[in-house]
Image (cartoon, rainbow, N blue to C red; front, side, top):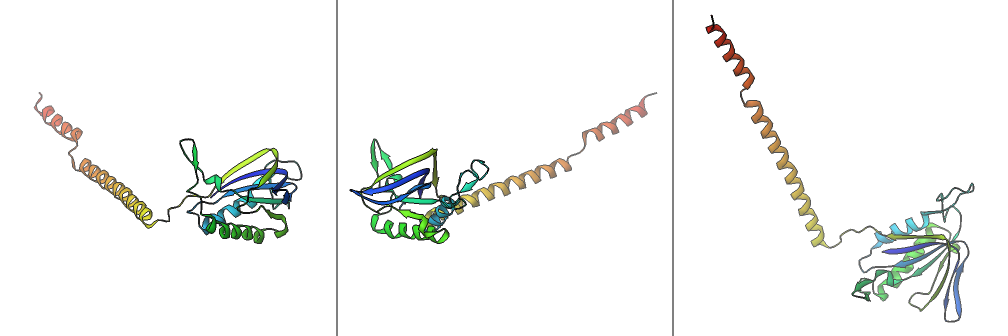
Length: 207
C-alpha cells in the first residue's frame, strides 16, 4: 500500500460541478491499494498517517505534533495510479487492487481512521469518480509512505525458510571448522620447546 501525505492549509474534492468534500488545516492523503494488500497493511498505514509528526508544537518547534495532537482534519482520496508500473513510457495498473475489492477495503480503512480519531474530522473523496483535487500544500511538506513488504505466498515463505536454513548451516560449518583449527593448533608440538631442549643437549657437549 502506498500513500502520499501532504500537509495542507486547505484541500477539497470536486466531482463535476459539485464540491463533495473539503478541509481546512490538516493533511491530504492520496492512497493507493495494491492487489496484495491485507488488513495488516491497512493497520500500519492508519497508524502512521494519524501519528506522523508534520506540525509545529505550541512553542514553534518543528516536526513535533501529529494531526491528532493538533486536532486537525484529514482528507483521504483513493488513488489507484500510485500502484503504477511503467512499461516503457506507458503506465500499467495491474498491481492495483481491482475496484470491486478495493472499494470495501478502502471503506474499512476510513472506518479504522474514524475509530482511532474523531469521525467528523476524517473526510473523503468519491471512490471511482473522476475528481478534481485542490491541494494547497503548506511548506511544501510531502511524505511518501509504503507499507512494509512481507511475503504471503506459501512458496515465497518456503523459499525464505530454506535460505535461512542455508545461512544457519553455513554459520554452523564455519564455527566447527574454526574449532577444528584451534584444536589442531593446540595438538602441534611447540617448536620453541624443541629448540630449547636441543640447545640444552648441545650445551652439555661443549667443553
